[in-house]
Image (cartoon, rainbow, N blue to C red; front, side, top):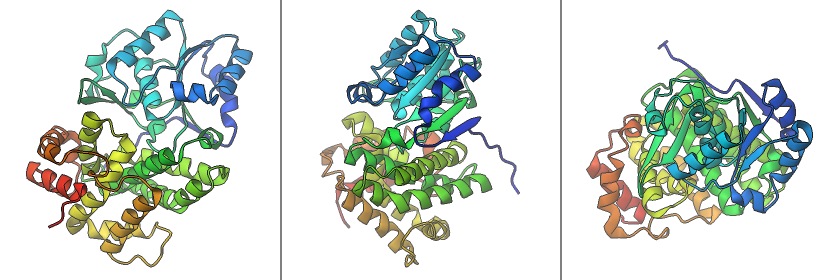
Amino acid sequence: MTTFHFHTAAEIVVGAGESRRLAEVCARYGIKKPFLVTDPGLVAIGLVDPIIDALKLALGSLAVFSDVVADPPESTVLAALDGLLDAHCDGVIGIGGGSSLDVAKVISVLANGQQSLAELYGVGKVTGPRLPLILVPTTAGTGSEVTPVAVITTGETTKAGVSSSVLLPDVAFLDAELTVGLPHATTAMTGIDAMVHAIEAYTSKHHKNPLSDMLALEALRLLTANIRRVLEQPADLQARERMLLGAMMAGQAFANAPVAAVHALAYPLGGHYHIQHGLSNSLMLPVVLAFNAEVVSSEYLQLATALPATEIRTVEAWIDWFTVLIQETGLPATLQAADVPFEDLPMLAADAMLQQRLLVNNPREVDEEAALALYRQAWGVTG
């Protein structure tokens, strides 16, 4: 057996309403004044108010930063860091989607004052300690609560990642109650995003291992069995919890067996057109599955056993399952439907080549010509 290393969060708490125990966990990790990172949307709908009130009641004091935006730029990270330092907080709680969790991760490291943000970018560049860190996802998608990665927007169309096991939290809370109010489109996008994580981890060219395989398979089983249920019955806590578990397991899988071409081709879509990450992955998934099929057909058929439709016995039927799911969710199914200009496709293909850290994990080589062909297919060009 090939030697491998597996990393994940130190503690995972699962259960509806468990986020109300945050103060208890803060005390256990020596946090007397937490710094809570979230986004204005969650504040507006009152989702975080009960958590803030409970923390204030139990701890007496906390500070809140609620200005996180999707694809957070460096300015947002630095503003959050200033708030953390000004308030003299001794721990960080991230509540929200992947953007809020990523900001929380990064400032928990920057708070030690030993490195600048620019010095963190890359793999294994974090050298110092971090503040105690607790992450609470409100979407079943990114798996950021159990991954050692944070993605930050560095320019108009560019992003950079911080990848270090130091970013793994002390505790991850999976509380299905916090996901009940998600809009239909967000539930669909994030659910498919998590499926992509599982698929790409299972077929990753590098670091694929028995633990990541086991998690990816179970993640895909949970996600595919429950996504239609949560879209049709949004208040179903059991289905919501299963989606959260699936997204987390997919996160654990790809944190150790990294993602590949779907993500590499999705990133330029987010950078240029601010298409949400889950949707950009959804747009590229079917064409990349078909592209990779000639080299990982056996792996795809193994993954097909996790789908709720037991009649899937061919790779074509496996790919069709996801194509139909995307159509049923009501999400745009092509780049054309997502308003991506056809004349921009060569630019996107060139930009995708900058994502070599992801492309090297793809089971089939993707050069610029292949990337352009995949974008053309995703746009709707046939033949």
